[in-house]
Length: 223
Image (cartoon, rainbow, N blue to C red):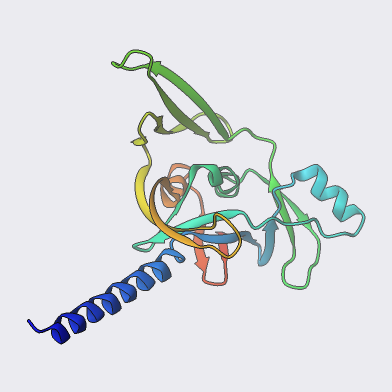
């Protein structure tokens, strides 16, 4: 192979590798999507407020809109919606019917929805020794209950020394976009524990239908 041919091959390899890298980066930014939670009920739309019933009500009594944090993230794969455990609790309240409605006419929706008074979500951690001396295995457990406490749905995964999905969840490899300092972006693939939202809907025999909007809204449609 001539020197010119080798240089041409190296240049082509660089172009292909760079293209693949940018392709993966573009894919990665689409893996986890930040969403607002909207409950559709009786032809009205209610925006979920994580501030709680009392704070939300106090703001509305002053004719002020409560601040809304856009911190909930979901993943859509094969037409299924998944959520990380730390974002599950708010969605459980909307799916189970454990919520309080606050009518307050805004320009694009009809009011706010907050968590109800029933305890439908509980999270606990447990630890046990392993075969290795001095090493402990830590397990996370989420218990979902219906409002009359007659049924329980258990979600469990091992947190350490290795992350392992145990019950009613799955480990999923996702591309994520990380920023370690201003102006720097790093794309990498990490493994996350994910929970399928339609499994939660089925547990509660809920009349709620989930619908994701590309504008960054997850609708909980109560029929």
